Image 1 (cartoon, helix red, strand yellow):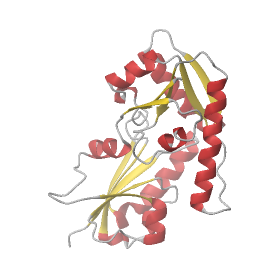
Image 2 (image 1 turned 135 degrees about the horizontal axis):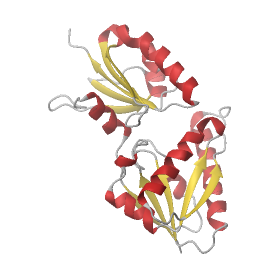
Image 3 (image 1 turned 45 degrees about the vertical axis):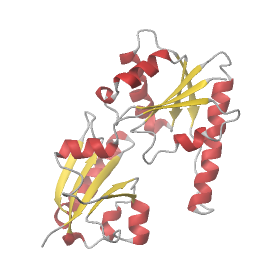
Image 4 (image 1 turned 60 degrees about the horizontal axis):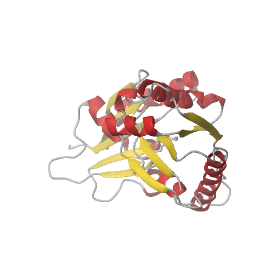
Length: 247
């Protein structure tokens, strides 16, 4: 039986990798790296850079292609089938290296927050010994970059997705909402004059972009900046925090 380490690596900055994460990379004898198409080759490159910086003799690397997710059979069913397909790619990559005893994946952010690696690992058969190494989340990197606390004094906050903001609106009783996985800039569906936003893309990386202000005043700037950045890089990872304005 092999050990599978899911290593949180932060948001693309090699300095985000913890000592524990670096040690887990060094002892791995096989690291799986996903490929998401030519436009997102930089994402594999970031992982390769991290590996080279924390190891003197890099381990074997097995690349696998991320399958496309179906969008024609309902969101949850599509995600479930997609996870099955990714688990199969992992299993095939691991099987092609039968001597590997310490297998690792470098997980963007932290494996526990809006990431599917733990659910995918649960589909492997036989089940490996699993080890999870925590990493800096995109939310932590965003609030640090803007120099803001995520919560108001004694108050909770909500972490959700752009899809839920579009479908359900502002979460009831929330004063602060962090939004992830939003490729459609769903903040446009809100009454924008009532919210302040702290937005960031490529947070923690050299390419980092930050915009903040009253949502109604900076919305157009975010939309145009985001579109240009995606065109320039071929991909974008962004996140934002919204707070209700006190009027």
